[in-house]
Image (cartoon, rainbow, N blue to C red):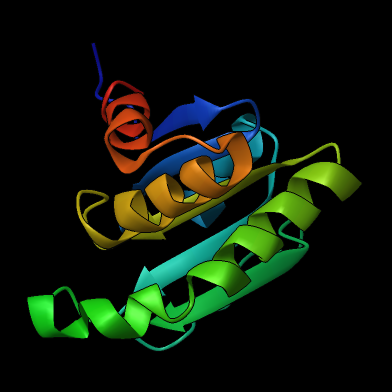
Length: 128
């Protein structure tokens, strides 16, 4: 079986790496994604027109960059929440490989949205 390029964490909330943006974001289109959060060290890239909103956060994957990402958690949470509330489309949160920065941002959202502790939120994200 082909490894999935994105994994559903909560209804409408998807997590993965940059690979899901290839082929005109075909993987995202197939899953009904309409909003993207990029947590990457690269410049903002142009996404296909079916992506309605794109939040781009410049963040390196080095540990010293963690504080910069942490300072944007509130913005990320509000973006994801508004996107899930307003649209029928989902939200895809990604970093380079989908194993560090994006899961951290999604874990912050899960904690905020569900009001659960970090360990429980992280477990939910890891099992997605």
